[in-house]
Image (cartoon, each protein chain N blue to C red):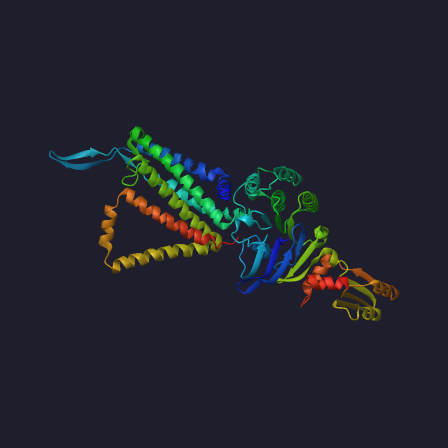
Length: 243
Length: 303
């Protein structure tokens, strides 16, 4: 346990990557979005009513920019295992403890930053989209429910990408670029095999029904299961790393 | 007493070559051992396996009585300082802070004193350090960690003579106050020879010599003088090298010599010069079928 905490502290020795940078970029992106949607004239769309066709102004502004922090969590994961691993192992830490400590950091950061996203979403709701009807922290379907679901979905999503990045970092450490290319190829192959299998058993209708019926909470559960699988994969890989 | 390091039949093969070939040795706790050998002899691979950073292909490795591989209890009692250590993008003081969290015996006082001795700027990113400064950082971490087993792999690459002397002095001073087991690999054999209580010489993945440093003094010597006298004197001894210029010969022979031998050498007007550790290593590494393990050296020196 003490070793795990030491590993997490070792990552945070330079807090810029894990704390400062993602939020600095988020803040920048937020300001850019706010200014752009103030500049752009509102569009309109036609609606058929009992009195004929009426032009309705679109006032809500949707943006997918919140994805930036998810991308950043992937990068953090790559850094956490790719660049920092050799010195971590030089400090008398086993691969398992290093991996566990890094994964604990992922969970803690995802929980904290997920909560921050939830708070910002609540503020966005309360201020009518920052006075501009901006949907920056609200994403239709995915992050649009009660606060606890927003927190849970953000938490799982962020942790998923961090853990996924960790696996990439480990593969890079052990097998370099060629390893990462093969790693991606292997993933594509798996997806292709699944698609072929579904086609073979004529299962696409079922798949379609499954996803249209899936709630945001259900999707979060699926992502959590995927995170667990990625965590196990990375764990199995890190034990073969040599530095 | 459990040996600090116990290696039996350790083999590590890579595609197309054998880095370590059935290496067997023990190191008792509380000693400074030199791990000597040429580039590519297998020194770094051996140290990496001891530190659990690399895995053996075959054989047993025990550190403090247990396998170091993925063993936190063993690993936190040892530190490996490598010449080619890869650091993340952090500053000198960050690296020291991380080490201080991981080593229970860490001495912040020693770390800051060594930092000053080596003139290392704590706020400089490790990436921006010169080769020598980077080595100095490794030395600071390795000594201040006060790990029970301290492994140094070419710790002073790029360091100037003054800084190397600082390292030797700091190592011996702290070792005297806080005894531990130190295994140090180096090319600069004669310079470091005074540090070692034991030496292990490794060549092409095999141990060619493992002995107490004291036992090695006088193990082999250069005999020079008139050809006939030299050949007469060295008859019956193992000869490692023979050079002849006109009627003068110079032969490297394996000892030991007793009082009578010395008297005979004087009467034959031969020059006898014991091999330095460095010369010994060079010759030991050059022997095709070496038998210079502890027992055989002991026999020769006590005979």
